Length: 174
Image 1 (tube, rainbow, N blue to C red):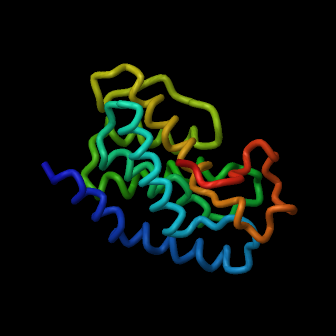
Image 2 (image 1 turned 90 degrees about the horizontal axis):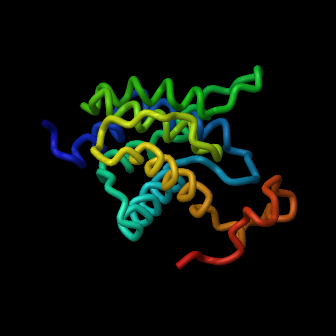
C-alpha cells in the first residue's frame, strides 16, 4: 500500500487535477468574491484535519486531505444547467482518487463528503473506517472547514457577498 501522504502527492501532481486548477484560475481571474484556488483547498485541508484531531474523529489524514483538495474541483466545468459544482467535483474526484490509489470504500466516503459540502449529508454508507459515522464525520469537517477557511472580515466584497450575515467569518477562529 502507498504511504498515507504519498496518495495526497499523487492528487497534487495528477494531470487532471492540475488542468482543473488551471481552468479554475482562468474562470475566477476577475471574481470579486472568494476564490477556489490552491490557497483555499490547502486551508480547507488543514482546518478539517485540525477539527478532526481536536474533536477526536477517527479519520485518516490522507482521506481528509483528499476530500479537501478535491471538493471544489468541479468549478472547472462551468454549467448552464444549474447543476451544483459539487456534482461535477465528485465525478472528477473519483477518477483522480483511483489513480492516486484510494480504495473504493475511501472514494465513496470522499465522494459523499464532496457531495455534502453544500450543507447536508447526502449519503448513508461508510466503508473506510470501523466507526459507522465516519462518512458523516468526514462530510462534517469538510463542510465546516470550507466555511471557516474564509476571511470575510478582510474581504473587499464583504457588503456585496451573497452569504447570509450569520455565515460570514467576522474574526479569526481560534
